Amino acid sequence: MNRLHHCILAIFIPFTLSCDSLGEPEVIPYTTQDIQVDSSGEADVGGPRLCVSGPNVYTVWHDDRRSGGRNQVFFNASRAGGTSWLVEQQLSADSSGQTVAEAPDIACAGDSVYVVWEDDRDSDIGHKSIYFAYSADGGDTWSENQRITDDPDGDFDALGPRIAVDYDPASSPDQELSIVWYDDRHGAYDIYFTRSTNGYNFLPEELRLDTDTPGSAYSAHPRLATDGRGGVFVVWEDSRSGGNDVYVNRSMDHGNSWLASDARIDTGDAGGNSDAFGIEIAVDSTASPTAVYAVWHDDRNGGRDIYLNSSADGGLTWLSDAQRIDNDGEGVSDSFYPSIVVRDRRVLVAWHDDRDIGFDIWSRGSENGGDTWGSEVRLDGDVAGSAHSIGVRLARDGNRVAAVWSDHRTAAGTVGETHPDLYYSLSQDEGYIWSDEELRIDDDPQNTAISDQPQVVVAGPSLYVLWIDYRSGNSDLWFRRLSSSE
Image (tube, rainbow, N blue to C red):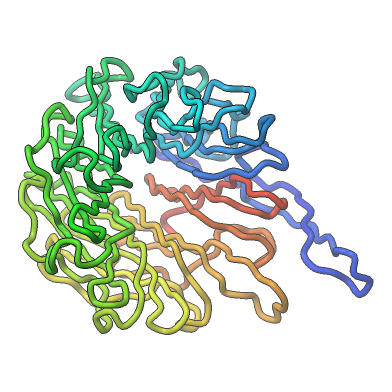
């Protein structure tokens, strides 16, 4: 395991915090350990993604700085664990800004970095294709942009790409890439997949993973996980039965072949009877065969509840009834957008819900692969329901687990409009016991600017957090590295 030296970079930034009696803004200087990753000026950034490999920290996003105000995809890297950053590069090859490139995703392994995104350069009417680029030297230089959807004239829309890389240098020098997206080449959206080795040799034809009639129903927003030994697992939203259900398909040979029939896994009520959203997937590659877990929220009970289904045989079969994870009354409150981590049969799920009026962050774990579940634990430590805490993201490395969320709690004596900050809690024992007190991540003056959409990685002794922040007026990309052992 790589050991990173935990360093602090302090910079001086003025910030407009409040107004004096004459109505002029009061500028309060402060020092910050946060680091701004982009230099987009008055442009707005979006779609951040984060990847960490050893001392290398990589991020991609889109912003609208170019002439014409249309989004392009940008990349930046740190060679020193995030303490200093390079000058960002535009990856989407259109400096004019007259086309749109956005919604990137990233995967990395050592000095190899792989990025996919949506791009409408081939279409006269704004249809997107999926584009790809890779770097073999930590992001210093990049391959030419490559379109991986077979649509040279932009006749259909391809959206929502996700990418993963598997690499085990002990068994092979090759890096196996998996890429999934949804597109409407047949009418309604379907789920498509391709694979590559080291950024080359893509499949000669994309594979469709939903196995109903092509284009007959909405299948979209796929999520992707791999197990490092050939298993590729994809879940998505699917409306073939009316409402929004959760479907899955899997491959055990790096995506070359898939099950002949996909499977619906939001089981326990009739297909299409309710709407399931916010799907996430995780695999336990310490299990043999690989155990696979999918979580989401759905409204089968009236209000939204958190549900989970699992497979103990590498995605071949699933539970006949999905398990409800939130433990208040069925449908009594709204529980949204779960996050999940799993290792050594220890499954941990977190979400936000409004059982106490305002949204709070809750977690629940199982020590036996989901056979039984422990008690719920509330992670935000202010007065229950007193301020919205939302959008929790979990990350894990070994026994260390981090939970990061956006939190609307206010500082004592605060009046007027306030904005959310980022908070985090740590566990050193797989999520059984959490920090006595959660801590704030962004260190500009509290409540003065929106901090949102955290991207979270735990690696060794460090917690890496990337987020969108409005402290300078427009949305920018900010980063913080913290100890994961506090």
